[in-house]
Amino acid sequence: MLLGSRQPKERTDLGLPVASLNETAAHAEVLVNATPGTVSVELLHSIGAPALAGTPLIDVGVGLSDDFTELSHPNSSLGEQIQEAFPLTPVVKTLCTMDSTVMIAPAGLDGPSTVFLSGDDAEAKRTTGRLLTDLGWPPSSQLDIGGITTARGQEHFALLFMGIAGGLGSHTFNINVVTRPSVQSPPSM
Image (cartoon, rainbow, N blue to C red; front, side, top):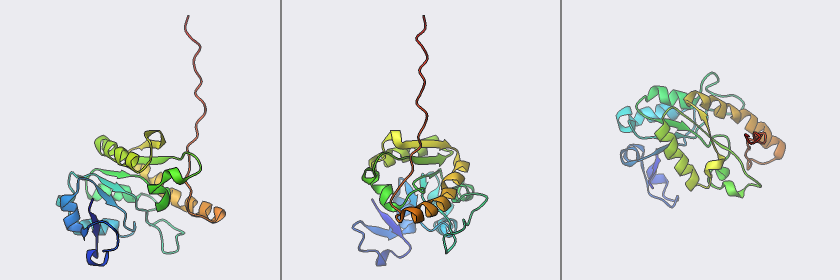
């Protein structure tokens, strides 16, 4: 695993090798965008479309105002904007409905919860799903909600997330999609 940073020389305390963004993109099988959503597209442009082409990009970013009260993409989503700017890069939006501690340790919660996937490329979603499983998200917790336009719902949840966090006094929580029990048909005779 190689971490990319805008200031790799300042990031020696992360326990993993850190390189420039361009070097990281050149070696990556999968890229993760965990940058502030207000600068993500510009930052990815600095790497360049050719370097990103064909490499799945998992986007966990959300663009919020400095005071966390407004979305920077109110009629769209960061995931959609990245996909539009880099059409040859399959983008999958996930993990943006929770805080970072839950992203990497979902078993630390009191009960099951749901992680969402949005994207247009089926293979990139399968790859993302395998990586989510490695993080502790079993397939039963993963919910594919459709194409990249559904990333809007995930990102817009950020405003509700902030309200829930205020109500709980903690950012360490997640949601669980609960469905109605399936009704079995009577056996055929």
